[in-house]
Length: 185
Length: 407
Image (tube, rainbow over all chains, first blue to last red; front, side):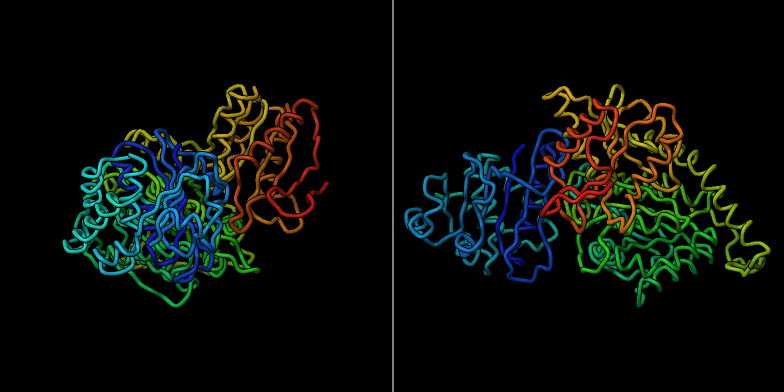
């Protein structure tokens, strides 16, 4: 079982990202769950979304999770949200930031000694999609770090997931995925 | 003519989308609805299907849930296939009309995305609304995941609309944990689904002007009792067979087998959890784990059909175990939990009476964890060993603060 926790602000597309990932993974014959904690969420409020991925049917419906990956798609949440909650020794962090990894670890010392990757999903989405929509770039970064799928395969699968959107938006998302895939460190 | 929707063999849908797709495929004549969290997307998706040309029927947005169910009653009496969706406060506001629907024997399908009842206000899932419906004369089917939410909603039409049955059916799923969790769902094609549900068999439609009929008459002392007795009689004697028949037809079509009471790892079980909703699956996973790791012969029993209450099937499932825990996801407010009372009432009639205890859990969406299930199974193992309760009869699990228990 692979477990992923997303830290996001409501409106940044973590739920869509988690569902998109689930959609792609389910096409390979695996079982998936994608869910989120809502409460009285307002646009901009800190929130979490989750993925479970397994070869067998997923029976576990508890919300509690010790994630294998923590994906932070809003830069500020690295400092204000409990992004290391219920971590394991092997938990990997992919964090949206404009900082270098060294600068990030200096600014948030609790990440020191952990497996941390950085990628600027906000800037990438501004450059490619034209607005701060850091969810699809984060998926590109996750593909690189996890080795879950080759870039080509993942992009093709995402094209199908996004097929209801105009070609321009699909192309922009593909560019965002590719840039994040190649720039995550 | 509505367009057909191309669906993948495996879709990643949440429970709400699963229910909306089942409603679309059933080719409903009238949906009257007033959206409420967490069932809003059922109605929202349905509206978008309609706007995009996938639905021929009427979709009426009304001013309240009371009006929504009233609209459904009117349309069903007129002679149409009818459905709607609701949750929690909406369900509570509908409750007066729920009894009208069942008393007039109108086979409406109501998707209930289970949610807590205020106060305090809470949009998250528990079974308070489902329990509120239990004396309303409706048939209640319960789904434990998104696939089942789709399957139960499709089957609800065929069960309730059968001229032998003519009763409204609720298709329940857990708020958020099912309704907002995207999972693998294998839908039928539009043609297969409609072929399964079948043409609506109208009985005494009011729009048949050549044969005038009356719905909702006043009976008073003279006939009220006979009407209610007949309805109860049909619930007690006709529904079980029909549900089995529809489950069997569905298995033939999809390979997915459902039972009136679901049993997991029960062949040689010493201890069993009885639960509803998503908790059933988490408990099933934990039972398997405890069997492997600790040799506890654990199993899970789950009523797929909550109303009519499957008295015989519950006895059959649980009569040979030593200890049973009934898990209630609703505040009993001054009593034992409803599932405890039902199960204990049934098991009192069997020769080997297992020790039965009650756990109140998960109110307002509080997480039911693997750890909770393990704790319950371990207490059950101790009860089985002792042959009597080693814990208080009713305990709260997952509640902060000092342990709360009664009796």
